[in-house]
Structures are given as C-alpha cells and as structure tokens.
Length: 622
Image 1 (cartoon, rainbow, N blue to C red):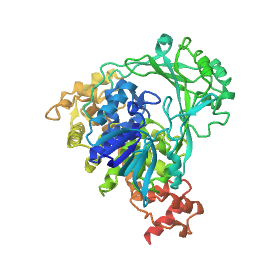
Image 2: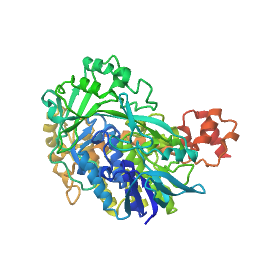
Image 3: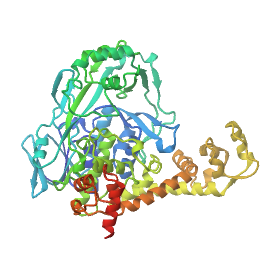
Image 4: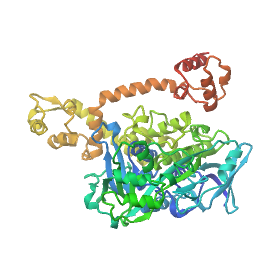
C-alpha cells in the first residue's frame, strides 16, 4: 500500500497536473494534500488564461494536460483578449465557477486508475545516497517511492497578514506547512521569502451594478481545449468600476498599520499585480485605478474585486471600498489579506525541474517563485512527465523557447532565476508570433504523442485539422475570384473593388477582408475538402492567419532556426569554468553555478557577455 513510483505533494494546479501526467503515462502515483475538498482551488481570482497565460493553458491542453478541459467545463464567461492587436497577442480568458472547477478536477483525478490519494501534511523527505526514497507525513506515516514532486504552493511557513494581525496559514482558513523548509535547508537548498495577496470578497446583493460598466463575454464564445469540450450557451457578465482620490485618502490612513510599510512583510510581492496600497503609493499621481468585479460562480452571490488586493486593516478596507462607485452599500464576505511564504530559487533545478542536490526530487509551481495558476500547472505537467520518463530511463522532455511559452517559462526560471513572483507575458517570448494560442496543438501534440501522453485520437484530430487548413491555403493561392463575386463585399468595407480576376489569397491580404465572409460569397471555399467541414471557425481562422502573416511567420521561423544552432551546441555539465581564465569573473561564477546545457542558454544568463560566449564557442571547437 505504501510503495509508489511517484509521490506528488500538494493538490493545487501544479500538483494536479503533475499527478495526472505521471499516472496517465503509466506511473503509480500518490497525491497527498492537506484538504481533499480544495483540489486545484482558485485561491485568488476565479479565472483562467489572460495575456500569455491563455497561451499556456492551450499548450497544457495540447500536451495532454487537463487545465483547458476543466476550464471549458466550468466556464461562466469567455473573452478573447487583444483582438484589436496582431494574432501573437490574442489571448483567451475565462471566468470560472470556482467551486465547480475544484469539483471537476477531483472527479477527473479520481477517474485515473493509477492515482491514489492521502489527506495529510508532509513534514520530511527520506533520502538515501543522494536520492529520494520516500516522505514522512504529519500523521507519522512513511510512504516509499522512486520520485517526489513538491508542489506546496504558498503553504511553506505561510504567514497571513491583515493589518497588524498575523497568523500561520497557507490560505485563509487552512494551516501552513512549518517543517519541510527546514528539512530541505538541511540538505543544502537555499530558500527565500515571497509575498502575494488577494482582494476582498463581497456580497453581490449589496452592489449597485446598474451604475457600473458591464463587461459581457464574447458573443460567440471560444474555448481552451482542442478536444470536444462543450461550447458556452450562456454567460455571466463582469463589471468595471474605479477608485477615486477619496478612496485613496482613506486607504492611506491605514498605512501606519500596514504590514508592508511597517516591515513585518519581508518577502517581495508581484510587480505586475500589486496591492491597492502599493499602487496608490507607487503611482501617487493617478487619481483612480480600475477595479474588475468578477462573479465567483453560477449559483453564488460572491464577487471577487480584482484590483483591490490589500493587507490593510479590515475596517480601512471596508471604509475605502464603500466609497467606490457601486459599492456604497457593499457587504464583505471576507477581507483581503497578504500571505508570505517560502520559495526555493529555481536556479537550483535542472531543466526537467529535478533538483540538482537530490536526485529524483522535483519542484513545481509557487515553490519555484512563480505566480498564477497557469504557470504552476505548466510546471506540474512538465515535472510529472519528466519524473515518469526518468524512472523509465527514457529521454527527458524539455521544450525550447521556440517550442512553447512553457519552454520560455522554464528557461527563464532556470537560467535567470527570480527574486519576485514570476508572471508570464507575451513580451517575454521572442518568438511569440510562432507561439500563438491557436496553433498550440500543431506545435506540441506531436511531441506529446511521441512520449505517449497525447492519445492517438488526439494526434489524428490534429493531422486531420491541419490537413484541411493546408488544403484550404493551397486553394486560396491557386484559385482566382471574379469581380462579380466580391466587389459588393469590398464596397461594404470601403475598399476598392477589383477589375479582373485575382487570387483569393492576394485578396485576403487586405486587412479588412475576412475569410469567413469570403466563404459565404465563394461556395468553393467550403467544398475544398470532400467532407465539406470548412464550416469550422477554427479552420477558417487558422488558414486566414497563415495567409495574412505568411511573410512575418517565415522571417521569425528563420530567426528561430538560426538561434537554434546555438541551442544545439551542448555544454557538458562537467566543464570546469573556473579554469577558463578568458571568461570574465562574473561569467565563471554564474556558469559554474547555473551549469547551462547549451550555448544558447548560456547566452541568456545575466552577466554573461557576447565575448564570453565567443570564448565558450572557441573552447568547444577545441
């Protein structure tokens, strides 16, 4: 009973994806959590996706993970963000029923035969000869295993702050794990502190939505999973409102009791999702800040006040919030709070997320200094895959920066480390036009099929889909349209008509021309494939995008191919950089510590100059 291939500690987003991936690949998995009622809990906002994060969820799905499927099944609103920008910036975002989200994750996990569950805390790891062999729990139970994935979230020595009050906890109402950090430090790991926070939750019955700005979902909602998940039939709206100078003045009255300003919080908070007190301090010239009011589910009146994260005393939070338009009679469900917790700087990991100090021990999620459900889930998936592959003595699974946002995420963490909660943005990905949300299945499902995670059915669906896309593009490039077919449409757009036949692809290069609209005027577009399934918006959109941006995509792919030459120049982990005296002192120190796998990864290390890279290339040439 107590022997497993892999033990996953923590059932947040990272832990759930790790357990599912390893078990679906064939490992016998034990998932340990302190509370089985809170699996994959949305501890902060009830949403998935967003800028760059939506791309990550689609990548997880394309690889055979479950985050996209659970998101689609529990969605209450869908929006494609950044539609006004280029396709590299399009990012899907969903509001979810946070209660159903957790229930659906648990249901899926309980239907995977290779997963067992144990509700308990983990207080120690068992190591023999530098290799993990098991864990010990708070109830005094020892489980033996071949690999462990730690996905502890914010629970390691977690302290919750509300004004001058502070108490131990990994989440409000849940205890912290107070032993494990010290055990890991004893093995030589280095830890540090980070801080995150969450806003107030309010009673929707006490809000005046009529004077707020309604934010409905897309009229034709999309979805995250490439599988046959349901499309939304109905949606719930979110709402926008704003703070004011009066609100800011009230908040400032609590600064002398704020744990941020009195020094009780030592950990660094997220730069791109600051607390409301941090925002009014850092951006003192701004007279207002946007608040995004999000429903927590289908059958609840609880609302999440996005933009009002705070650790100020609850009475100050209450007074200030009641001065916000639409919140004049607001009632709290619970105040906002900050949480400070331990993390382990990720430069202590290999690119598989295995630790360098203890063999077969993996870290995934916020323990590595990241923030966000999506970033955590991606790490969990990759850790689960790699733990299984190593036990089977199979080749490791590492994604390059040109493969996926997940590759960018892990490369950034291992190569650069992080001193503040790491959040993914499109700007972090130099190949973002190649790494679009729409083509994640084409990029990643074949790779996942190669390691045995993505099913044959899923892979075949990708082959069929892109066969249709390619056939449609070929048709557009070879077939001409007549003026009589399209000139009325062009006139509607305010475009100049054509005077002679023109290739459909050439016509599609006009920014305002839509392939979906063309297909309604040129029936041949819908009959290119024998089964006539070009009614699919996904196929039409994909073909249109590839035609419109063909030259840009070719250029970016060419750059990626050139850079990949550096990625293919391997660096042995046994190189003694201290002996390479031609390297700068800083380069020797950082290369010795980080041990990059390739010249490309070495070039991204802060402090390693182009001159240092030249030295390494000459060294390899010898």
